[in-house]
Each structure stands twice: as C-alpha cells, then as structure tokens.
Length: 222
Image 1 (cartoon, rainbow, N blue to C red):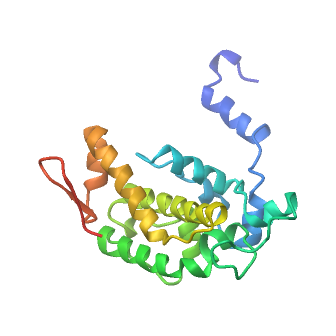
Image 2 (cartoon, rainbow, N blue to C red; image 1 turned 45 degrees about the vertical axis):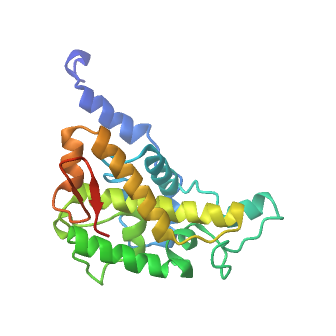
C-alpha cells in the first residue's frame, strides 16, 4: 500500500469517479432513442465558452432529460393533453419537441444553411441530424469556428424550447428562426460590447455571420 503522503490528488479523484460517482439517470432514455450514440459524447465539451447562462442551464436539463414535455405533464395532470402544442400531430416527448416536430423542418433548413455558409460546416448525410442538433456531436475539422458553432446550436435548442413555451402558455405560434435570430443577436451584441478581447475574437474568427465595425456597430449577414 502506498504511503498516504505520496498519493496524488488525481489518483484520489480517479477512485472517486470509479467507486462513488454515478452515471446520469437519463442514459437509459438516450440509449433507447439512439442505440448508436456514444453516450460519452452527450457530456463531452457541453460547457460552451461565452455561452449565456440561460442556454447553458437549458442544455444541462436537456441532457439530463429534465424538460417537462406534455407527455410528462399529462402524467401529473390529466387535464394537460399529450399532443404537441406546436404541430398538434403527435405526442410531445423530448425527441419530438426538439427534432421530430413537423413545424421544425423549415427552421432546420435555415439553420443548416447558416452553419454551412457562415461557418463552413461540411455536412455528411450519413450523420444523424437529430444527434447533431441535440448534442452537437461533430468532427472539429468540419467547421471553422468551433465555439461559435456550438454557441449557435445551443441557442437553437433554447429557441425551440422558447417557441414551444409560447405555444403552450400563450397559444401563439411564432417562427423559431425569428426567436433564434433575436436571441443570438442580443447575446452576441452584449458580449461584443462588454466582453474581453478573447471573447470578441471567439465570435469573429472564421465567421461571416456578422461584421464588427470600428464604431462598435454590428452588421449581421444572415
């Protein structure tokens, strides 16, 4: 047995992970939905540099399957219908809300176009668009500005949830793209004004999504 005095903190942490730490309870759900998904990818690099607190919190709850969909709300209150508040065609579980809803088709076309044209995403049709949207599983060589790409995907997920909440609580249908653009422009504008030099470089590197003028004005090129 090693002398306790020479045991490294790293070794203690490794044993803690092996013997004490538990895997997230959401893993069985994700395995059931996507049998080919590498579960480690769900948690790999999920913290996004320069991301908004709201989008970070939303991503955390999404990965842990802690989003209150209509399917879950129906189990708690039978007065709440199981159907999707946006399309009204299918039961609203987590996967339906974020990737399978028919009302997301146009938004996904515009999002893919944006990532391809503005950030140089090289899309392989053999990849799963659903996994891509939910977790951002990617090969880093396929896109120019990794951090901005992850930032945009995080806010796309948040915009989808926000549109659903508006439909659920206010009975209004608003295009996801308009919510997404508003979120992104507000968050990036704030970071360009208040952020440090490294944050500003993070959002302007290898991207034609917007240009930053000397006077501080941001010109968007959607």
